Length: 252
Ligand code: MF3
Ligand code: CO
Image (cartoon, rainbow, N blue to C red):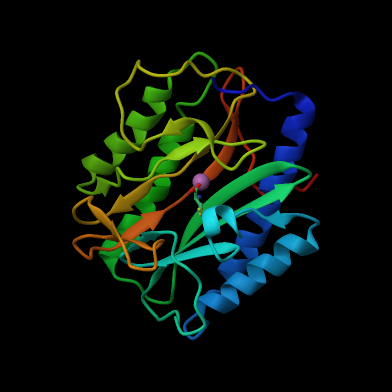
């Protein structure tokens, strides 16, 4: 069962997700060669708390930080570390969640540090474009498989591959709700989308083969072939005509 949120619940999710977007924008400005991933994490945690929200990932299934920082071949769930230093040419994925008055927001961006090679820039562009392609399928009456397929189609057309071990998800009073949202699928299949459904859509894309392995820290997922990866995520609400992106900075 995919929950339908009320207007009041959507307002809280708009704020939770807006806070995530604001803090990600702040982190994007701070990512530079020499900064440690632990420093990025403390900026993230302080940014969330300063906005009267709580870090959603901290303590989730034992995850030890507010932010996931996944660099290059790291796909998702990279644990911040004072000894892990960002370098010129890195692709740094920042994944952040916040809880505001009981409701969750979740979003991720990938940032290019300094001068990155053409393959890596294209990986970032294709991954972000695949998220846009997915969002353009979201509307009342569409099927979830239409959304999932849109990601896969754009990525494979560009000679890259989607990660299959991790998915997007419904979101609301919990970080992970139904439905699960793979980055591949068949058009015309799956849940029928309805206004008030709230989804976290998150393409994870590899330049090389799609296989991933989880490192011995129990969290960091890396591409099995060591190829570079990228990750973008938005929390959105299904509307009658399309989709409202909740994880954006609101100027209201
Ligand atoms: N965006 C990721 C997800 O939806 C982040 C979760 S990190 C965790 O799974 F630590 F909270 F698990
Ligand atoms: Co997510």
